[in-house]
Image 1 (tube, rainbow, N blue to C red):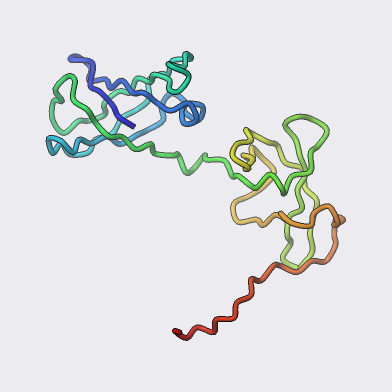
Image 2: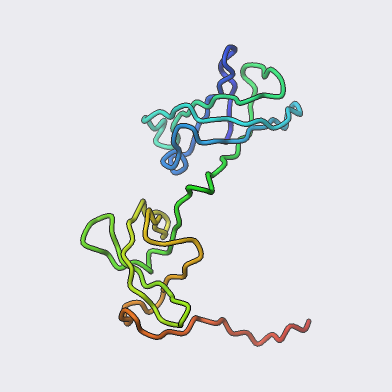
Length: 174
């Protein structure tokens, strides 16, 4: 992302955010900005708000507040920014092939691999579906494995074997 410093008073940064990224942002989200042109060291930003309007159908305008800048930033400079996902609350995502649609538009079922070599059918709540992946709002935990191939032929409690990719290489160099 490219950013411009706009405010002389409170040190705010106006950002043109791609639509796909804008949909995932909420006030308070953090970012890290830096300038390669003048050697400005990196500093943190916090999202104040984002416009509902899409400019040219490609970007939305967001305003970030500068947190503890190393020095006063001149108005109009261009910055590079990297968004910081909140890993503590970032939802899980799984391939859409793993989903069996449930009774509502935001619910589905998945087969979860159990340590004993069986699968258990479990209900999950869905977030957004994008680029072949579904965000899981609830129902799965980090590290759980879901069936992505052959789920149409399974039943709850059925014994399965995990896929082990084969190779003809035996570790030596050729």
